[in-house]
Length: 354
Image 1 (cartoon, rainbow, N blue to C red):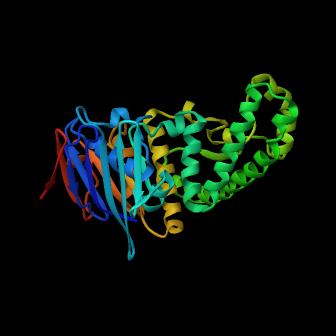
Image 2: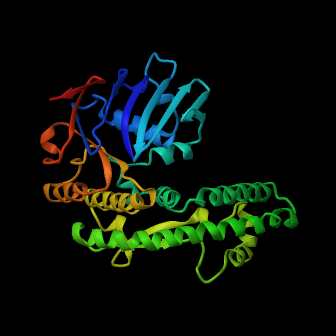
């Protein structure tokens, strides 16, 4: 999957622009606050329907603008798709090939992953961060996963609402069968995905990470019980707390070094290298299932990495099956030797370097 054309208007500090990305490598340079991260964020938003650094859309709109628009043309072999997003006060419209689209529809025609300066939160952050990472991979590999996850979330919302309102046991437990049916599917698909992913991650990490790390999957309840049994055992606690405490919504990827969490054992730079390796392994794993290269956005790869770890990261990027967009203050901090398009941002204005 390649982004062949991209244009944006009204997004953060970026002046209206359009360009045709290189199918392999796009190098973006510019001073601090020139808009480099915003450019990657705009591409990410077109593929995900959300930002990788903002929770809402208000701060994404350029000062003085009513809203923003993003548009891209993607190619996949002989196929071509047109995707667009328009955000105005109180509404957002997404379209793919002329039809109204969801975030999932955008993700299918523009599968994008990002390694940004906050990527270390994949190691250091809460389980929710790792669940999102896990679910992105499962979504692109298990094609009915989204339906199962939505079924589970709907049943979970209803059960939790009944718990909070202190409904009768019969009313609360009425949601258990749907919760269990969808939840077991979600957990099994995640487990199957993780088993495949882990083999690739282990093979990569052994070559590029200068420390040993163990990655394991926690499904959200003890493997000694079925989900139905776990709900039974936690029934009184769920009633007391007003929420469902066992299930796929509590899943996690556990990263450990010598029986302790990796977040307590490695530096910020090492966390970044570990998280970036996890991302690159995920992109490598997803590519054959998608049937094409993906998009990988890499924002300021030199930040908080010493020379050795920076070289390890650049080595990982050399053969990743993805169309790359990489930013840096200057070209000396970027990978060399690959065919590329060199771009420069100055106060939000984009230009091509010869």
